Length: 80
Image (cartoon, rainbow, N blue to C red):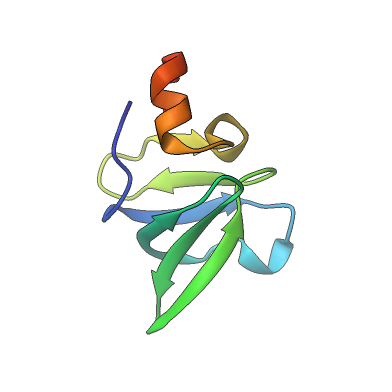
C-alpha cells in the first residue's frame, strides 16, 4: 500500500479525454474519485477508467484498483 496524498501525478488515461495530460498534486480521495490540485484549482477525477502516473517514480496506478475507501482497501490487503 502506498500513500498517494501529496504525490505529484499525471493522468495518462481517462474515460473523460479532457482530463488526459492533467498534472498536479494528489489532494483528496473518496470512494469513487480523487482530487488533484492543479493550476490553483482542485479537479475531481473518477477512479474508474483512469490511469495515473506518479511523477517521482514513474509508477503507474490503475484507478479501477483504487475503488472503495482507503481503509477498506487496507483491510482487504490491496496494494494501492
